[in-house]
Length: 193
Image 1 (cartoon, rainbow, N blue to C red):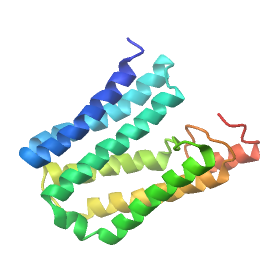
Image 2 (tube, one colour):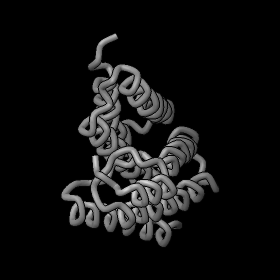
Image 3 (cartoon, rainbow, N blue to C red):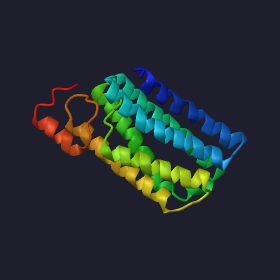
């Protein structure tokens, strides 16, 4: 198995991001949205598993994974806004909180560590799954339901945990699964990495 396979999977997910925009603008076909979302979910799961198994889970690959996730779900959000603006308008307050926390985290991490965080927290993984379900529900099935609300609020909780981790850690680290792990790292001296 090629050690480049995890990178290839991440790049496949990156390629589906602009496809979501194209679909929204020119051919809003629900089944195609569903396929893009499933491809994004499967590649997001297996790029990390394969990277660890092949011993190529570098900090740069993990950071790229996080950037591609943001790109993909940003494009999916554009598609949702373009096709079903009422879904987002009716949730503008929690979405504004979520966006504010995302920007706060990114800015804080840049100021404190000189780069974005790449914690791959358990709460972020749960949020990723909730995002998949919410976007699939809306874009592939045309439903506006509580799954969307759940994904937004789970994202807020994940961002709060990520901000707490950044506050606790003295040095940039990758792969910090939870605030409990961050507190243990700090107690152990947080040697960076």
